[in-house]
Every structure is written in C-alpha cells, then in structure tokens.
Length: 145
Image 1 (cartoon, one colour):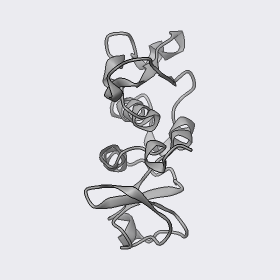
Image 2 (cartoon, one colour):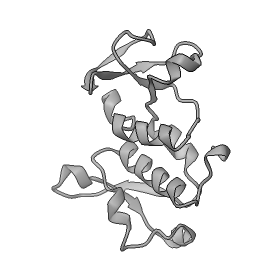
Image 3 (cartoon, rainbow, N blue to C red):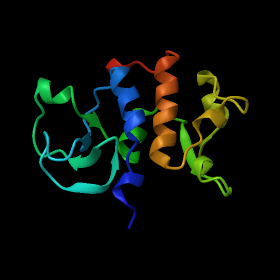
Image 4 (cartoon, rainbow, N blue to C red):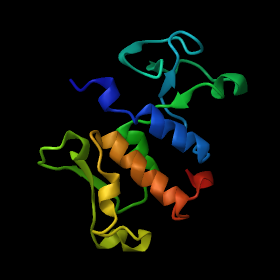
C-alpha cells in the first residue's frame, strides 16, 4: 500500500496552489495536529502539519490555517487534456516523476527545454508543479477548476 504522504502534494506546493486561488474541494488537508480538522492523521509531518481527512465543511476562519492536500487523482482532474506524468527509471529520487511531453502539450509551451522543472519525487508533486506553471502562465484559469 502506498503511504498517504506519497499520494498528496507537499505542504509547500499546497500553499502555492492556495495562494494562486485554487478552490477545488479536496478530501484531504494539511492541518496542524488536532487544531481544526478531526480525523485520521499521518505519521509524516511538514512544518508541524500533517495530512487529515476532511470530515465536514470548513469555516472561513479554519480555511485560513489549513491547506488542501490534493491527491494524484484530484490534480489529474484539474489538469487539461494531453497532460500526463510518468515514472522514470533514474537514480535521483527527486526526479523520479516527470511530465510526459507530446504534441498535445505544444499550446502550453511545454517542450523539452522547460519540462525538467516539473520533475519530482512523487507523482502528486509533479502534477502540482505542472498545474502551478499552467496557472501562473495563464493557460489555466482557477475559476474554471
């Protein structure tokens, strides 16, 4: 079984997506242990945060202090067609997951020269990096996610 922290984007990328205005409703959140959201917790912590299961609606006040822990599947739903990731056979764990570049990605200026910036140790982080790039460069509008 794959550990939960390998299936969601990192806290740093979750913070960037929130700052960009992504409001897609996730199932999991990064929360400080026991502060706002009850539910199961993960043994992995980042900056005092851990992944918890969303068990109810979140108030505006709570939403300021928690971050969406988007899963591989949720990130895939937000990405446009023709965007795909793959697991590369490489020695560097931080570059294991990569963006697959093919003809359908030309309109997003994703080419061999710039796709290395999306490499990551997990598929969720790779997908989150691609989504951030697409939003920051105006290829995806957050209000349509």
